[in-house]
Length: 280
Image 1 (tube, rainbow, N blue to C red):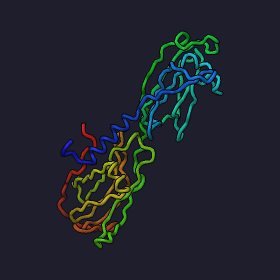
Image 2: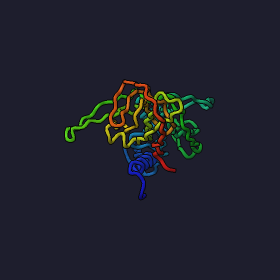
Image 3: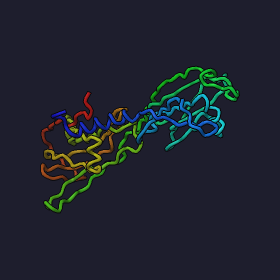
């Protein structure tokens, strides 16, 4: 779309790609003799780096189900799998008298697909999915968000010199949350003038794409003279995280001096710079 900021467009594309990563993948099932079965049901899988964001559900052919169960030492229809401490896949068979089941080790703020199917004794030599099992009941549920998952652990700054122009600049640096609630969408760098009770904060919007392209080094805004605090807040699919601990600096209008606060009183200026990285 013409006129849109390139970062916003790329952020939207990244987001749509994540949604598109949920795909159907055919699973090849072989019978007891190793022959390939032509009739199969679909296996739902998640692709890409976010494979833990969806519960993988597998079902099998009528003719091959008994052989698959026998090959599985745990007698599950497919193997349960943990990745980074969270279930990627999980399977469990229960007695018909059990009507509830609690599953832990699920990734926070993730969409899971859950299927339940009732079957008669699968050890029967004439076992047939269509005749011995009920229809599959499918439900999708999202787990709760983790309160501290989107927090910025540490905000630092560094002086960067440019050998070509013989000039230097100050840049902020922070690490992306390691295990956020879904996907990080953007960051807000929050500048607030110290010593003025009614001063409004200035928010600089930094998209995730921009943060990655700049290797996590974000140039400071050139602000009017005054004492300022800076903090950073991340926004994920679950909402805003907690602000980082602030750092302090003095702006002289043309350069910055960190860690020195001077009692300078000026009229507060408020500028809203942070725009939404996703447009409805």
